[in-house]
Figure 1 (cartoon, helix red, strand yellow):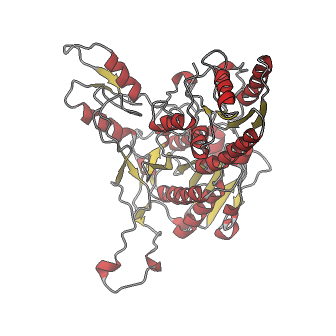
Figure 2 (cartoon, one colour):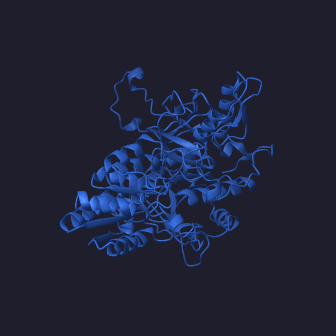
Figure 3 (cartoon, helix red, strand yellow):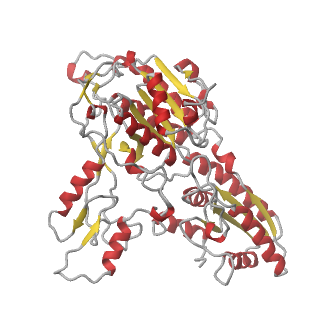
Length: 527
């Protein structure tokens, strides 16, 4: 579709975003609480203005300035504005082709029959709703030392009344990257369904992740409602997945050659960073391409979101592994059940699975350091549990305790550091420890890593996938690009990808959820 380019060249940001941040730059749970805590600890006179950086903000705020809230919100609005193809082209919107009004029973009354099913571009949702009275409140996330309430609005997701593409001329592509995750097929299915509802005829799948854009022999797969109708009944990815890929320029060359207008990218942090790089390269070349991501990770480690699809299913499957470990441990003399769960950056699966099972005595996550040996170590506590209970269950996240292991520093195809196996290490340490002290211990080690991610999505995830997939298409037709379709504060919203790839989301050790987990397990501090 022909479109006039805007004369201004200011649409393109030259800022380069890293695909992955180093551990040095990663925050445990956002920087605002830490800033507030630091400010509280400093002795500051009235003559010295207090200045700290707002969370992930480029502006420095002087909290003695009466207008600091206004400056924060102006910066927030700029950061969370949604990139659009209208930044590049002078485009005239057209009436949407997405309408369900035809399925409603006509009443004859114009007022009653009016369908209010569209989202206004000015609609917003609050990112956070809790007003903390103090930085010392459990889970507090504060901007200033007084924990002042500041509204943080983000854009509501959904169908718009006007669109910027002619559906019959659109070629849409879907790609799934990274590892497997429950719900991938549900999202693919809903994207295809919604595209066809708009009137798109040319829908293709890119096989095996970003690799499908450049590797010879991998041909794009034509997709239709008929073809994908039942794929949600199975786990895995109908399109296939892979890690890593070609240079961004090579991928965009392929997008340009294939004449793709919309690209839907399903993946985690690394995939989102790749999608943002593709979006930026398309803008640099002034291509009218909407790049929309859908967050996929069982680890639930993408910033700002309530949860990502696949997480609920993974927790449910992980709970089964924990229950098996409990039965094994309970049935043995001095039985110890040890379960290692996924979570390369965060301990959300381990924490939630431990809470849901109710059978875990020790939960170890990467956000909370621990020691194995010594009077305050995990092994000493296991001795206590065997003496008092006769058995115990330990749940450990795969990234926990990496400081206790030798790490080669090697990375996988996606650039992720290959973690040392904490599960095997703990299994050996436990066996050796109890052998050395002359106490029999029957250790059963369970690693359900691939079982929890290869299964079909449960009901909760299936609903989430349905909405996220539909909203991804609505966002593309609204002209947005470089965004992700997600859920925040129970509402479905669009976020700029740049705001969610700054660091992995991690468990806040001061949060009520972690405190609930500690209450459930009854474990002490292991350091």
